[in-house]
Figure 1: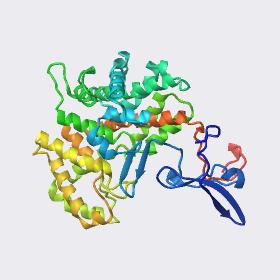
Figure 2 (figure 1 turned 135 degrees about the horizontal axis):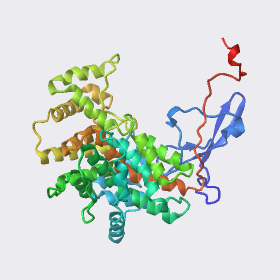
Figure 3 (figure 1 turned 90 degrees about the vertical axis):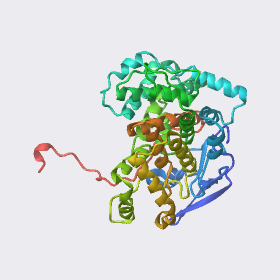
Figure 4 (figure 1 turned 60 degrees about the horizontal axis):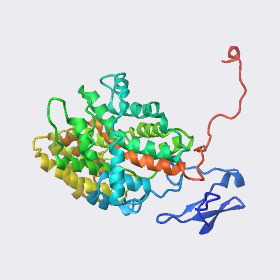
Amino acid sequence: MDAKTGKPSNPNTTGTLTVGNKNYDFPIYKGTIGPDVVDIAKLYGESGMFTYDPGFTSTASCESQITYIDGDEGILLYRGYPIEQLAEHGDFLETCYLLLYGELPTPAQKADFDYRVNRHTMVHEQMSRFFQGFRRDAHPMAVMVGSVGALSAFYHDSTDISDPHQRMIASIRMIAKSPTLAAMAYKYSVGQPFVYPKNDLDYASNFLRMCFAVPTEEYKANPVLARAMDRIFILHADHEQNASTSTVRLAGSSGANPFACIAAGCACLWGPAHGGANEAALNMLGEIGRPERIPEFVKRAKDKNDSFRLMGFGHRVYKNYDPRAKIMQKTCHEVLNELGIKDDPLLDVAMELEKVALHDEYFLEKKLYPNIDFYSGITLKAMGFPTTMFTVLFALARTVGWIAQWKEMIEDPKQKIGRPRQLYTGAERRDYVEISRRK
């Protein structure tokens, strides 16, 4: 990176774009790993043309050092570390430190980071009254979007994005308070009193306690479930420049405060094509109803003329087995074995459908492997969470990724306000006609 221009240092080569009888040369840069990129920043100035790329699927919107995905090979790296190693050997707060600071912490750094997060877990007491403004039957994700956005009204002492110290305080606050807000959203939806965080517990156990403890009984988190919850958080912590992360970056490019940016990310994540996919997968299992009906629905899924689609299989990015799904599959079975669930029709359907997907030639040929949403939905249901909470848990985990991406963008010297262009196909210029003369 060139410190003066904010551009990657020295293009490796150049590429030529020929349009009609004119040639335009553009620099080509290599990343550490992954495809090369053509820098077309000067395309419009030199040619008067834009590129057209719906969904930006062939466009690098930024330079980043945080997360790398190779969908063809089924690889996901956080700061260079394989997701499998982090989920197997580390914990979520260690992953948070890694995403924020770029390196795994030393024991002293980890202890200090855990302490700082744990001391920010409470939310302002007035927020409990803020929650009472929501309808009792409000979707927990709607409550989450509203309450995260409201943090900027309660913590305006950390919204100056030009101050590195305030940026870090806001980052720690978001990581620490997301579980508290998520648990409050859940408690509000079921009509139970809020449970305050307990700072001597680990991150996942503290969250489970805030969700499932009641004042009338002692509660101790099952260590198998706490470990599963922690692993789910790790697996969902970041996923490169997906829709919600791009939304956070786009909102942040305007100079919006970090709480507003994360609220924007939550809103985008809520979509069924993104963070709502695990809820959709479980709803599909409910539609199937019982294992005997699986062949009928598999047949429908294979029929191009049938609108039915199997949710929780395949992935837009991964053309191989999603590396997160392998870990989630193991975690799912650990949870089911620990809880000894035997009489849940939905889980019976899920387990049978998993067997079909892993052996049916149609699924294998098209690489429609069960993805992370399939297994995480089953796991969360077994742990006692309603489907309406699934995307909230996703948002909780993804908060650190959003914050890390936001922080990286703010500190990027070439950062500009996001302003995509368009291919206009509307009416040409026309003159206004008085209403009395219109027919």
